[in-house]
Amino acid sequence: MDHLILAPAARRNAVVEFMRSAQRCLTLSMFRCDDLAVIDEVAAAVKRNAEVRVLITHRARGWKQRLKELGALLESTGATVHRYNGPLMKYHAKYIIADNGRALVSSLNFTRKCFESTCDFLVFSEDPAVVAGLNLVFDNDRGQPASPLPELTDRLIVGPDHARQRLTQLLGEARTSIRIIDHRVIDPKMVSLLLEKQKEGVLVQVVGQGPMGGLISHGRMILVDNRVAAIGSIHLSPPSLDSRREVAIVVRDQENIRELNDFFDSLAADGANLMSLSSEAQVRPDEDEDEDEDEIYSTVGA
Image (cartoon, rainbow, N blue to C red; front, side, top):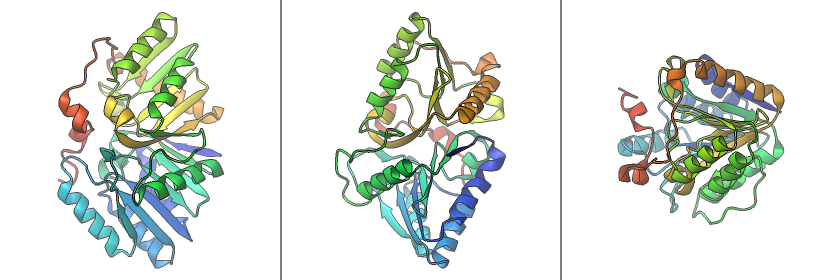
């Protein structure tokens, strides 16, 4: 059973309550974190004798010193902190596992900005295959990461191992509609595929700019034929597809699909939010090296 959270007002409490539910073990993958409520819950889990493991990225533009401080702060709580030391450009995945029985896969970072101001997605799942798969990813990546990853459930899309392949397949299978929320739809091959689907008569809509209902575009969601969705940290951009550790979860239950479709409708109703696809899509060199949502975080912590 999956549970979807979209509203900014519900995000922080949902994450805090999820972490608070862990009695035996708590596993977190962090890209950025500056929200003290999350740090407090890490400390509280340690105090109730839960085993707490945290994996943090080695690189986030503008966060070199902050990542050092974040690691030291987490260690001061008694948590075991692993700093990603593998070959990938970034460790950009965002997920939490509680008591090896429940999991959260998210597009948001554990920051005040994402808890309050962004268009983002959280999926809570009790699917044992999702929990086991995320544990495999964490255990693989916390030391000297091996490649390729062990075999995982098809409910997880993990980059760069198979993100491009799986998302190409998902989009290629579309028969009636493709609805995307992503402000970085810039991968030439993916853009070409979307344009080809348009020629086949598939309705292709991309939201990721404009007023966005007062939210800042950050989260990533792909909804195909109103039957299946992929939600997580993966942009349709070359760095995200090919060079970074990313994680997305596949959602198929119709209640959540309807909610995602309604949410997309609410954004697409304002035509200013819709993006135009171009076969001339190009990636700047700096994006190839370190493409990210850095503008969003330029004032975080200020």
